[in-house]
Length: 154
Image (tube, rainbow, N blue to C red; front, side, top):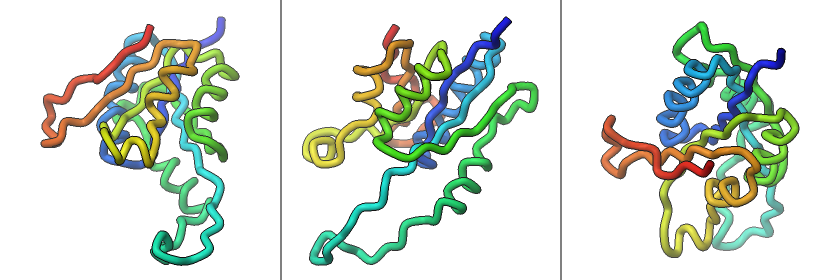
């Protein structure tokens, strides 16, 4: 018998941190393992100018260390980590298909308007492309503990 898999994607943001409790609850309720995923985007080649801030990207070793620190609070929930490189939405969907995941859980920053247009929406693309249910958790603007999941695609 194959254990069910819940893919939880993290970008190390507070929205992802908050969504982890939902992913953990879904995994625990369905006796599934949690596959904790982070997708590292390929480095951009900056030519300088106004868009370059001179902020160093974390090394792959540092990112892996950060990923390994993301764990369910309940030690009875089985989990694994996976670090991938590429387009975040595409890789999350690919990994979910590859793992025959039962669902995907991820947090969203809830950007709208120009910020969403400029930065895109990983969550929206995952909802569109995934072949399994997706739970998207949006942290309230006030970061209140009473935040609820924003969207579920079944």
